[in-house]
Image 1 (cartoon, rainbow, N blue to C red):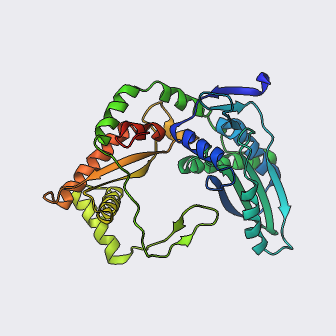
Image 2 (cartoon, rainbow, N blue to C red):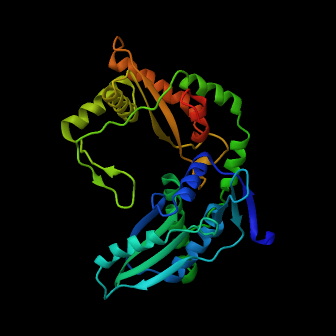
Image 3 (cartoon, helix red, strand yellow):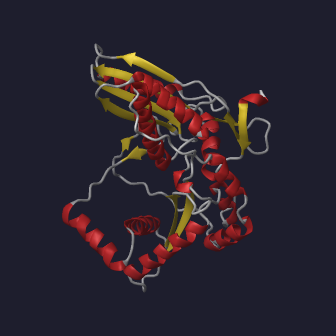
Length: 346
């Protein structure tokens, strides 16, 4: 058994939270991710498979499973080798509408989190020179940035193998990757005392959660998820006005939207403050090469906004912009611990 394990290490902050919710609600598809890619042209199946086999060997997170039973803290285990979970199917004489039903079925199958790989590939041939790839994986493995890195890496490997098969390859082999374990090692070496002091100051005096308002607006239920969705388009002059304001004040659009959301929540709750969760990239300046690492780096943090009507909107947003900069230094703090540092309690 030990010969099959490449490495064992702890979880990143968001991995801890996602694992907890995934185990507590095994029927939920909330963290089951499906990526669809349409491929046109003469697909080389031999190169396609070889490229994905390379991906499994190059990126340890794709060979990772999770264990928690009988442990004080959960761990992730990287296997030395895993089988390529690929199905190739001919759908040239089938109704493409059936693909949508198949997507739901695929999601309902889920994953056994203790068995790697926590991903699978299904390649559908829709026409002679048209294919669709369905790549399903658990959010425990990857964030959006990592998906972009993997797709770029896969296209490079595919081009490499196409050339190697034809004997005319001009695509160089890719450099070695830095394993996700290096990031976890870096996390384990951070100064938790300093981070705890920062968050205690941020959350001091916060005694109750910001209540979500009961609105009459009808939301479209999200299939299989415990919330609804509504889309609002901001275009033309409105969009340009927001962009111009941010440029003039030296702000990001993210800061402006955070401020607007906080004021809305606080106003509906009848308060002069609001606290809500924000997602951060979690990719540090160190260790070197973190921007090219593949894994789950993002994190969710509490953002507490308080306002004083004597301060101008522009100045208040600049204070919020500065606060976001401060959060960047402590964006790796596990959310599960932070609630206990407020006066709401754990």
